[in-house]
Each structure stands twice: as structure tokens, then as C-alpha cells.
View 1 (tube, rainbow, N blue to C red):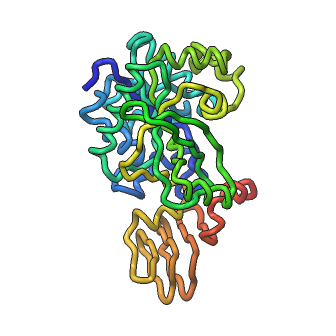
View 2: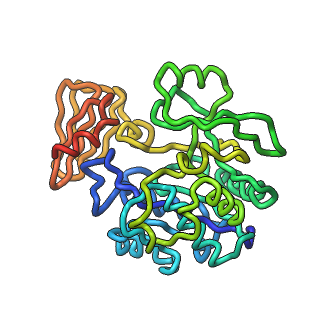
View 3: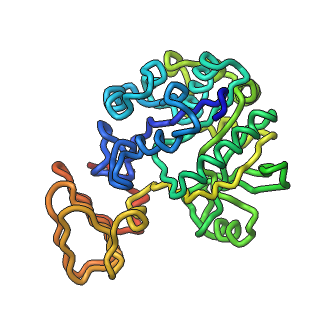
Length: 331
């Protein structure tokens, strides 16, 4: 265990693509649909033996403070950084950098992780995380994790991987979510990996990058949020940074970004239906049915997502669940 290693977990997302189970008061990271524990709890437990609780920071919304305290009683409250409003990931990462510097100084190494992902091989994740931390500690580079793509995803960013640099690789190019033909080319080339949104850096390295590319973010705390622009860390820094290294994220990473992830993590029947709760299906196929409220009975349907809570019911075509945010504007 590195004594200079810290981890900041970003936990401020609203999880709108998991509506109606995910709500502003109880967003996706607090749900225990996958893995028997909340995604936030799993994200902390993955760090066991790598980063102790007093060196774990949580960046979350002020409205989620009580829920976070209840979910993570072992994390010191001073380490739970409360955002007064949402300003996307650039502000969250910069805020974490300020807090890590206060705790460990400019030579401290920090990992930026997220609270809404799953890792099938936790031991491999810990090993690769420590490898990335070593690379960050011994260089002036920002280190990120790249996941080998298994299909031409259009919902993820991509990184073009260059020449090896020790046990890691140089990043040649960052690309935001491509269209399907481009994603197919990336997959076929074997030169691109998915951008998993996890980063490692020395405090001094990130401060230098912020000073160069986003000076308004240097030294910020949540008190500064009202004046900040809303921008992602990828756009603000990573797409411009010249010294970026990539480690192979071979640990069964899953973004669990939409309800279609249920196919991979919930029990399925012989017709490809993923279910949870009181569900009865007859002549149905390739559907997701999650009953957290009223029971579900479906007959002769295919390729649907059906979710019930005590307050709402969702019925959607599986190929449209990426558009749930549009639906919520009308609800």
C-alpha cells in the first residue's frame, strides 16, 4: 500500500438513464440492483488494501450528503466534498485535487474514480490501479485506464493507444463518442480503447495541467462553484494534454450506463429475459423486467424494458433507453 496514494470517487451523477428506480433523491450510485450492494459501496470496497478510508474522498452533491454519510460511515466527513450545484467533472476533479493537496501535499498521488461502474475482477483492478499509481508517481504524466472494446460502442469515448512506455502506453488521441461507422473502424483497427473515465496523477502534475488548460479551476473548492463553467474533465484537460499514459483496464469493466446492462448482471431465462422482483413472463424475449413496486406480468412482448416503482412505471423499447433523458423532460 502506497502511503502517498489517495482516491477521489465522483458520486454526483443523477443517473437519469435508470429512471424510475433512480431519482434525484436516490440516484443510481445508491441503488443495489447490481451486485447486492450499492454501486457507491462497491466502489469503496474495491479499494480495500489499496487506499485506507481516511485517504478516500467522495465528491457529491450537497443534497446527497445525508445519504452518503449513511452509506459510507467509515469515510471521515471532512473527506466528503459537497458540491452546491452541478458543474460536471472538471470542477469535481479540480476540487478533489485541492483537497488531496491539503491532505498529502503536491507529491501526493491520487486516483479519480467513479461511483457508477462495476468491475468483475476486483483483484485485477487493484493490481492495475497500483501500477497506474506507480506510473503517475514516477512521471509528470496523467495516467488513465483504457478498456479493450468488445463491440462498436457509440456511448463511450475512445483513446488511440501509441507506443509502450514501460508497463503503460502513450495516449495519442482522445475521441468523444463516435458514430457507429467510426466506432466499427476503431474496433477493427485494434488501436483504440474505451475511455473508462478513471485518472491518476500527482497533485503537482494536475495543477500544472489545470494552470495550462483551465486556469479558472486551479485551487478551487465547492465555495467557488457558482462562478465556474459547466465542462467535463475530458474536454477541459484530457483532450488537450500532451503527456498522457494509458494502462490496460483488463478487469471486467462495465459502465452500467443504461437498463440494457441488466442483461449482463441480472438472472436471465432461456428466452434472454433479465428479471428482478415479482415478474411473470409468457412468450416474451430479450426483455428487462424489474419490479420494485407493482408486480409485472407481460405476454408476447420482445425487446422491452419494463420497470415499476411505488411511484412510476417505465415501458421502453430497449433500443431507445439511451433517450430516457428526453422522456424525463416531459414527465
